[in-house]
Length: 278
Image (cartoon, rainbow, N blue to C red; front, side, top):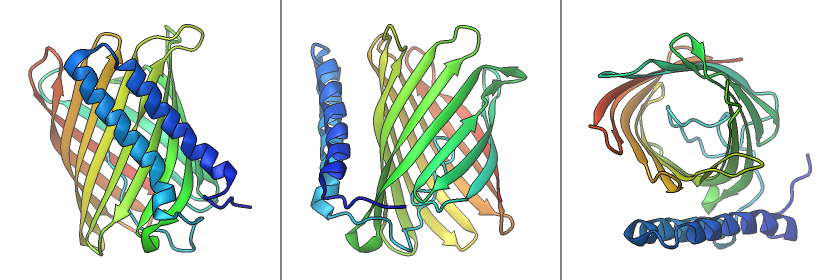
C-alpha cells in the first residue's frame, strides 16, 4: 500500500481538517459563558494536536510501531498501526451498580489494510438491541523516535426504532514513555442527525497505562462527554482497570469506577471485556 509522507499536501490536508474541527468547536462554544471558555480551551488543545505531526516530524508506519494498550470502555478498532488481516471479536459489558440495565455489546474488528481498520458493533440493554454501530479508524504515522503514534477514528451510530443517527470524529494520539508507562488520548466531536442537525457534544478520553509484567497491564481511563450545543449535560467516567492476557490470543479486561452525570448522584460502574484475536 502506498503511503503519503506526512509533510506532503495530502497529509497537511488531513491535519488541516482537525484544525477546522477544533475551530468549529470554538465557534459552537461562543455565548456559553464560563463553560464556553472551557470548551474553547479544549478547542485550542485540538488545534495543538492537529499541529503535532508537523512539530514531531511524523513518519509513515514503521516496521515496529509503539505498543500502547487500548482503553477498556472507549476502545480502538485494533491498535493504531495494526497490520492488514488482523481480526478480533470481543464483548464489553458495563453495569451501573445502583441503577439501570446492563449495557453490553459484541464487536467485530478487522484491519483491512496496514493502519486501517473497520468495526461492527451491536449494543444491547439487557436483552434488547438498541443500536447498530459501525466505525472506521486510520493511522497517520509515528514519530519521536518510534515512541509516538497518531491517527483518527470515525463512529456512526443508528438508534433502533427512532433511526436517529450519531456521527463522531476523533483524533487519537498515543505515546510510550518507557518499557512500563504509556498513554493514549482521544478528542473529537459527536453530532446528532444528518438532514437536520441536533445537539453537538465534545468527546474526550485520556488513559494512562502501566505494564506490570508481560501478561498484565494496569490502567486508568477517563471519559468525558460534554454537550456544547443542546441540553448542556455532562457525563464523566473515571475507571481504573486491569488487562490480563489469558493465552496467546485471548485476554480479559475488568474495571470498577465512578460515573458522574448532570443532575444525578455519582454512582459505581463495573465493566468487563473479553477479547479473542484470530
